[in-house]
Image: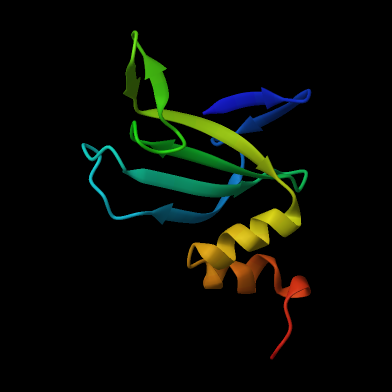
Amino acid sequence: MKKVINGKMYNTETAEELHHYWNGLGTSDFGNINEWLYRTAKGAYFIHGKGGPMTKYGVPVGNNGRGSGEKIDVLTKEEALEWLESHDGDDAIEEYFSDMIEDA
């Protein structure tokens, strides 16, 4: 997926995928969510997300319906770290965000 946001191109085919999250629901489930965290060659972070009609990715269809959808959201480095922390991304945190974590 490609999307221009604030004059910058975000492209899942050219960016590096850092982590994938799936909520475990099948693609026919209205609550299904898949999200991928990417980093561009210039160091920008973004989420490419897809989801069913009852998720934040759902889109209006017809007069009162909803359908599955997808979108790209831009994140700061801090937001990307927070997303990884809440989506079981410990391996990616260690590999890409080691400068932002410390031992307890």
